[in-house]
Image 1 (cartoon, one colour):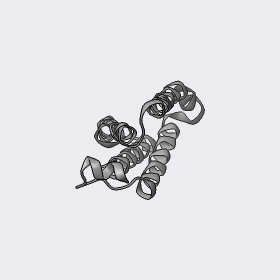
Image 2 (image 1 turned 180 degrees about the vertical axis):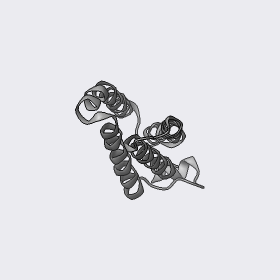
Image 3 (image 1 turned 60 degrees about the horizontal axis):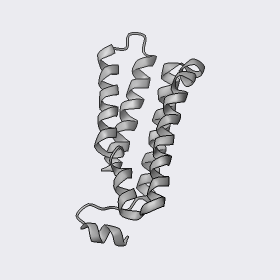
Image 4 (image 1 turned 45 degrees about the horizontal axis):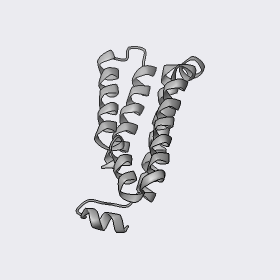
Length: 125
């Protein structure tokens, strides 16, 4: 699920960057890319970190991990307009597309597969 989500986010963001660079880029394509990117995030990358936190660590460590996730969200929120001002809208979304690709590669190499496994088997990994 995380691989599908990060691949979909990367594809949607890359398509949006290409559409933004076109002289006559369709606003419907751009809107579709935004919706697909958000949808793929909600499908996989939104809930998966919370599942990993709840299965791998407890107590204080879970609080630290949740704080880190919220801090990263805050960082994106606070830096978005500065990035747009510096790199333009297409450059900003290109940065997000690259970060999504890095997330895909990290997930592919480091996050264990949980499909078809019980919660007990996942906790043992």
